[in-house]
Amino acid sequence: MCGIVGYVGSNDAYPVLIEGLSVLEYRGYDSAGIALVKEKGLEVYKDKGKVDNLRSITTQIGKNSFGTGIAHTRWATHGAPSKINAHPHTDQHSKIALVHNGIIENYSVIKEHLQNEGVQFQTETDTEVLAQLVGKYYEGDLADAVRRALLEVEGAFGIAVIAHDKPGLLVGARRGSPLVVGVGVDEMFLASDAAAIVAHTKDVIYLKDNNLIEMTPQEYSITTLDNKKINPEITTIEWSADALAKGGYDHFMLKEIFEQPETIRNAMRGRLLTDEGAARLDGLNLVLQELRGIQRLIFVACGTSWHAALVGEYMIEEVAGIPVEVEYASEFRYRNPIIGPNTLIFVISQSGETADTLAALREASFKGATVLGICNAVGSSIARETHGGVYLHAGPEIGVASTKAFTSQLTVLSLLTLLLGRMRRISNSDGVSIAKALEAVPDQVREILKQNDAIREIAENYARHNNFLYLGRSYNFPVALEGALKLKEISYVHAEGYPAAEMKHGPIALIDKDMPSVVIAMKDSIYDKVISNIQEVKARGGSVIAIATEGDTEIAKHARHVIYIPKTIPMLTPLLSVIPLQLLAYHIAALRGCEIDQPRNLAKSVTVE
Ligand code: G6P
Image 1 (tube, rainbow, N blue to C red):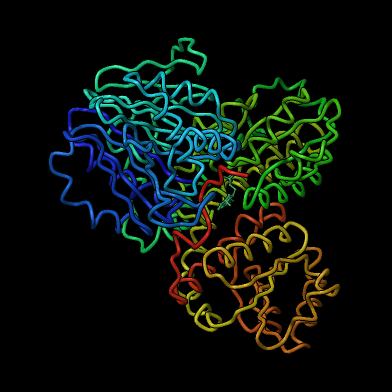
Image 2: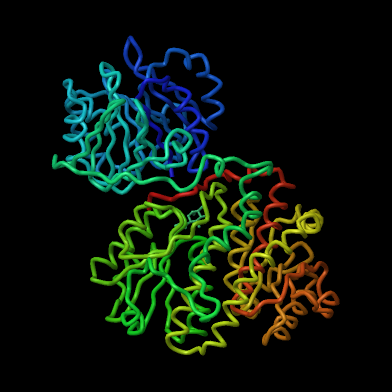
């Protein structure tokens, strides 16, 4: 959730670090800081708030910054978001400086020991405890001091460390928090996210848990924390730095919404077998006979990915006839779930680093289950630790509110449904119908996006409302949850998603003229029931924004505003119905003057519990 950038090389470190921080800001951003090895020792600069605040107090140091430094954007866990608590942290003699993602769980015990030894602490953070510990052990061999300190530490960390008397040396280590190493010519990079370094090199090494790296501009050496040599694999980043630019859009979120025709197509490319009415997902690493024997699926995820999983449950149960359970990762990991034989677990995560999802994956693996992943971030911890899986190929998602990852997840889940369905319940011709409908989705999404201006006008009518209800049924119940989540996340407006018929059991009490309802009312077998739900809202003075099927001539009589989407088969409607909800949330947030790409209190990748 916080961001780390480190540099060691023949160029100035400062520009690499400050630009890297700007790219990483989406991960967490209540304060930022930078530390450089200079002639007279370590120089540390920090500030509260955005990276631009830090930039404004540090532009002068860009000159002659030397080629060694570390930087950090923070999302507070221990200690308030303040300048003093911002990283980097140093030991009491400023021998070393350290940035840290994660949580040191036994920090209070270590802190007490150090205080008894006379160490003076400056901050309330767990990270300073680690910095003081490394400082205590530092006697000229930085990697050794880091190793000794980490052996005493419990919890999660991704760290980068420099020493006052070691220009040209950078040490990093990880357990539980991601770190990627960039290999350049006469320069090396370290970051919590490849986005921060892709402008400089595409050759990267994803560090594994309990790995420590020591690097100079020309060389690096990776060992385990107990000092066994590792031979790393260098991989190439598939996307370019352009993917990290807004490309003319006001916000990354809007850009990512508009990328969806392409990202949905990318998710099915080479996988959808239209003529066979089937799909191939080779990355699952399972032979067809193994898949045939599956009697139960469990999807585990958090946030938007959990909503995608719910849609997947509806799809797979209906088309493939396999029972599916959907679990919040944070619940699954602690509740000793029953995982019988012939049960397949799928963890779904855009970032591939969500702490709860990763822990759930480990718990399921520990119980001997086969765990597969549906991830976007290549080389992420979840992608690496699963037995197999499917990448989304959606490119980096920067906006904190997930949009294109959600529709790519739905696309992959549709492919999985086809694959499993064709092995069990559905014929070639039924499979071909689904495959053709899926093929049409990218162009249908493009058609919906053309209504952007009209959706903004609708948003103008509702931007001042402070409570919303989102209602949907069947496949579109999870979309109602997702629409409400989008609005909450970026506009700080209270919104509840509900199965439309459940509204009568509580939320209906809230409805009045100030609480609009967004109702997904597809022309399907339960259309009439949804219309009744709309009538119930109207009878209480509530206004309705309906998401309806093109050609539905009746709905306009019932709803104050209607946004039409093209017709598709029921299981694919979420891929279309969510698009207007993303745009509606975006425009309401923009009209309220909210920070869309970096909403308060949220982080893109939640790497702590
Ligand atoms: C955070 C993000 C959400 C995301 C969730 C799960 O809360 O702000 O957008 O849906 O984490 O993330 P994952 O990377 O596991 O999909």
